[in-house]
Image (cartoon, rainbow, N blue to C red; front, side, top):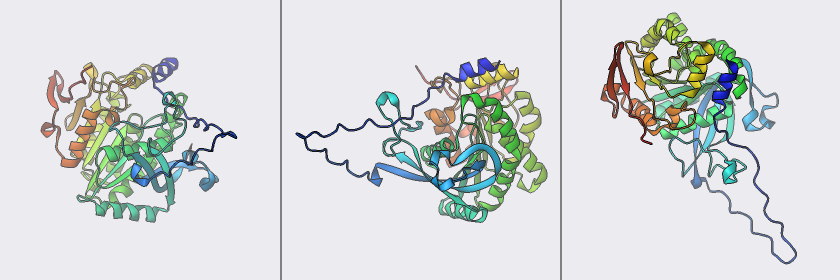
Length: 375
């Protein structure tokens, strides 16, 4: 079973990290080349995002490479802000990274989405900064993104900035980074760590609800990360019934959760936490197909015959909209899904009012569908 999981997920195309080839050396008969012009800020946009994490920080934090400042070892909650570059020629749905086949051997903020800076903050300063950003937005918005398996802290920061930019989000973008190993082989360790992180996610969500000052709070969870956030919401609503309907929207993309556990144990609490809960599912998601084989049970993010239909939760079948190899990150890579999330957040429309969703029915209930991308 484990071999099948890794065999399927290993289809993911990974970008290489190397260095630029050196310039030709000057000879006695040629003048040295002029230095390259300085990079202008206008060639890329800086996007600020907030982070909370229960990863252990590197011992020599300030002198450690940005990508390695947070480890994959669980710890207590810490907070801060990150600055990420978005190229001016950014393509919506693309997390631009160095590509070896284009002879790009180093991150360049003009071409790539790059983590530029990290600033640690104490809890009070963090929430004060977040509240300030929220209050600058027209509708007092904030979202928190909880990533999935095989995601490093740096990649979570980059993905959150891309999401905020592609959604034209006006408010405070936040990500919660739990100690994923950031490797294909770390699946089973990641399963343990997301379970251990649920209590910390719960504590953060409580503070997020109480101290962000946001009128519109959105929770976005992906893949294995949905296990931690749904359990956290369940426990939070039980302890804090005053937070019922506090969240404007909860979005679960490709949830890697046992489908029956989701229906029976988690869905009722999600409906109490928000009046608008959206579940995106796909029958072409190879990562969830692998998880289904490993666990022996359908996943909440499956579509087709096992699609999860729960009263009060809007299930959207996005099968065929993601033509990538794994078809697992469609919520940030597929233009139709990005557009649907954008309309949901900008207008707070239910699925019945969003285009181009099509109403569907089977013998177990109703759901919605986004038309597949034509090949």
